[in-house]
Image (cartoon, rainbow, N blue to C red):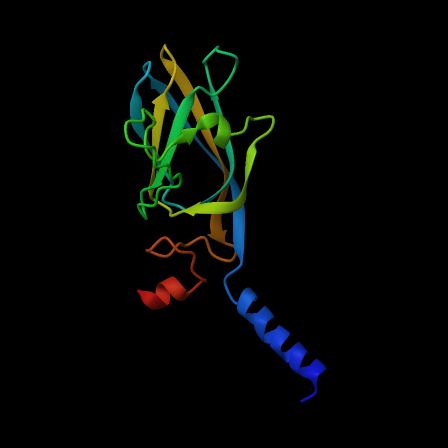
Length: 177
């Protein structure tokens, strides 16, 4: 086989592997967490992902009522409840007052006018819980709004989801049952 034909054959095989999965429809979805956290305290809040579809998170947005220069005066930690994965890793030195596995919200979130677009979207399993840890660094109660902006992921030809939360092709769920 000549080199060009070999290259074409390898490309067609590679392209077939990429396109062999089910077509996915992306429906706009926004999850919002509103929380009030007392001065200089840390609290954890659950954010429940709907059972109807996996959620692809693409934009990080936050605001708060702290009037100290309009900054996001809190630290944030996130954990994917389905996998147990910490989405933010921080190992502060011994004796530090920094909450482990958190980062300054100002470094992590954008605003509604200029969202922090994620370079690689993160997918949360349908029916899972996102655990949000907020460490308020203000000297007063801070009301915080965190927006998870993205898409529900559903098969384009069938909105039935697999029991494990993974997108399945039409008929595959019936064959498995």
